[in-house]
Length: 61
Image (tube, rainbow, N blue to C red; front, side, top):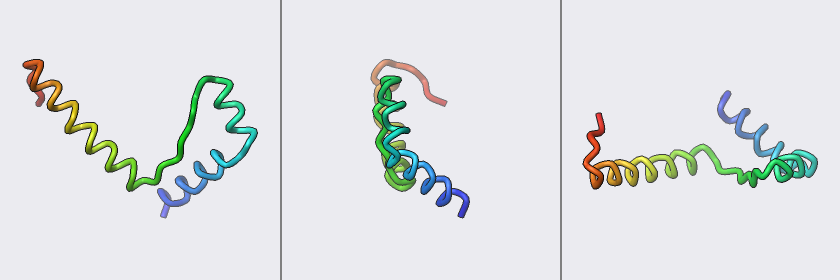
């Protein structure tokens, strides 16, 4: 419930033109993604970086 409220508030903020203008002025190009989408992105990135570490001979614990 809390995560859904927080997600909705963030989406609303990104829909606000004034907020977007301020973020863009700071060089930030925000893009809202749902929690499920972010979970999938994180899982994909973790797998990719594990492979990078393996290829570089870095031990991941």
